[in-house]
Length: 331
Image 1 (cartoon, rainbow, N blue to C red):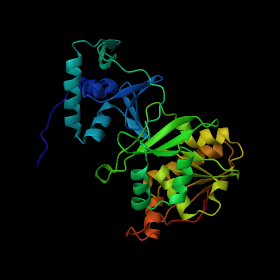
Image 2: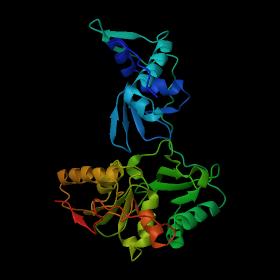
Image 3: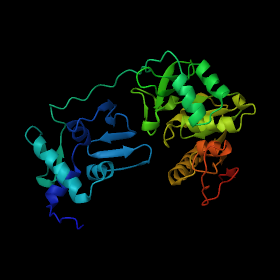
Image 4: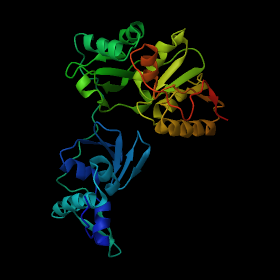
């Protein structure tokens, strides 16, 4: 099928490109919240500033048109049409600012009718009276060792929430105060759901700090637990940090809080996003004079796939390029 050609003037293209994304999302019933000078799309790892967005998982961003094309799977003409429809409605109550009289530089202020909720204080989701679904999910579906789960559950760092029965991974500060919660669905019908609790501080995501100088870095809590299950020998002596994305706030937060951590092993996913993130993080570590930095790749896409293969639950073809490596030193 041929895509219908639609002619847009330069003014129309620029107007769509400059659409305020926080206003756009809330007009479509999405939840957003203020985070300093920016806004966050609730339930996603995307920050918004005016017509710009940044995806924390993918480590890339763009303009309003790019955002709509990616998030709504639209062509360029469809994205521009959607955004122009939204801005035409907002023109009734939006101040239009012209930069030196040039309509190509139109910018839109946040309309008075748009109310952005203030940042809410962090609160853990209410806990369920038991953890049956969480144990069943982590052990039967993810093949995590029961004793590993019990260790974190005993310290209140893993539990089942009461409303949705998600598994909640709790991150605490040096005083043991919860500062971060990452929620993951235990339902087979909604297995892709994952989100950070409102108000979570990225520097305190799910982790374990040991006495040795070694810290292993993972994308997700499931990966961390899988790795410990695969390599349980004296695991509590080492440290483990989850990023809950491919951003690096959690790692550098823990390095700052625990200066004895000097040997850093990056264990992110064996895919393009994971490898790019490891290169970026390794470069930042080098700038901060961390000299003992290495990469440990799973054989398959992530550490849970490795664990499920080891347990005989999963049959898959290992990633061939680039080859997995036991320990690749980053110079």
